[in-house]
Image (cartoon, rainbow, N blue to C red):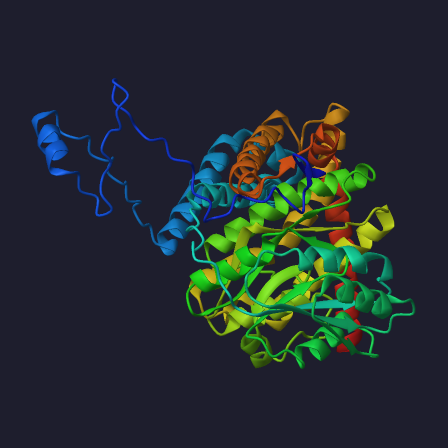
Length: 500
């Protein structure tokens, strides 16, 4: 969804009025036109006026401030689990006739496998997600702005065309601390470095270049990390544009978090959403699906991916785990290693950046397959049971179920839907189609939250994209699950070669 503001671009919302610009005061007068006495600087009225006021009705008292009841994060997690369990139990009770039909047709093992993968498992996860989002009450950001120095690392290869816009968005940041940029050039064959130096000089943006000839984003990031002297590091992809307030909000969330927080993931939305139907569908995935999952994980202080496109890290924590690993999903494995020692990773929904998503189907399928392989690499490198925090262990354990969801969707749900359309409601029936209204309710709640609590404070608006939304609901999961299955197969093939 292309984002726009009144008279401004989505990445540059209207400038708020200056903090020291006091509103004009109206001098009160009596009905006869004489000046009425004002309170003194100390807040007291002159004695004559005070006596007159004391004879009148009592001054109205300011409304009492309602204090929010604090609910521990562990209690919210327990409530979400209980709600999900109740949902699954209710589903099992309602689905007894369906299970009986499948049992008579294919036996008990097939019946329970089909119902579990198609209904109980996805229903339980969606119920847990919905309950978590309802319980999510993120504390406000500190009012006092931070002046912490930040180093932004951009790993780039042949990104000459994107350099100017990315650096301009960083230079427009309203973060009060010093912001410097390290360009980690990973063997570019175009004029990426020259363009970056020219733009940085024009903008007055401190920039230095690190050359890393070894191919691989992790190598480029680690080469840049070795030169960092600030306590905080932000990674930004070369094709990602930062909102003017993004850096300030990201740093503020880290400073307001507990001391054992090592990273904060920002919100990444789609910039090139009007290119074609594929980018329109991805717009809704980033805006609703990915944002909802990250909010759930952030509630439990266990965001599983501090994505390389836009995230903030403590420099010392990065170096303590050896930087970015040489892996397909280097940001996934890095995040899990940061949390392995009991540390936390937060998510800040109002720290917004805009990135380019794949415009061609082949590129999209390769990207999602790579994400699936990265998740499996993370599970292998740092299994959930090695996480020290119980909440992190539980949230990471959900990833063990994701491949089962993809298998159930592509191997059972899609063939069952085809049979349903041909008049054979054995696997998919009217009961299973009832998941669509539930999905619409969940996405509707996420959309309302995004509009009110993310786009509202940033002065952004969302353009209509109804056709993309319908396609996202009906077709998008088929593309994602099929690409993920391809990624799982590639990972298994690679593992088999390693074992040999």
